[in-house]
Amino acid sequence: MERTLVLLKPDCVQRRLIGRVLARFEDKGLNLVAMKLMRVTPELAKRHYAEHVHKAWYPHLEAFITGGPLVAAVVEGPQAVRVVRDMVGATNGLDAAPGSIRGDFGSSQQMNLVHASDGPESAARELAIFFQEDEIHAYRPTIQPWLRAPDED
Image (cartoon, rainbow, N blue to C red):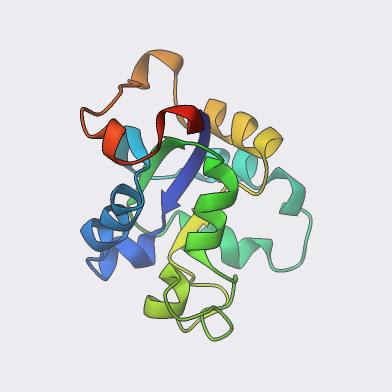
């Protein structure tokens, strides 16, 4: 099982899409093993977006991500990083494929509803920024035998 970080950004929260977006991950058979509603501080934003802090557009990103509450979640499942990224879609909602989260709900490059880790290394780093290990609660759903064949686990 692989874990990835998903952030339902302030625009997702303000647009009341939290349940609809989370349901997509559950419908896919992924597990939500940690979740919290929180405000990102400027310091936390700088840690999370460390590679972007010195870019000219960073102040706009920081103002956006700290501008309202977001939902941070740990999503777990087979190939979770890739599967979640595919489900989220292209960064710009206008370019995202229909059926993806951004393709169905997004129309902006910057206000793009969801963050999803872009690789296993990023996921590990980002998960450690947003969650303590004791906040993550892995479980095996009783429906598991109906989601994947036994030899696929």
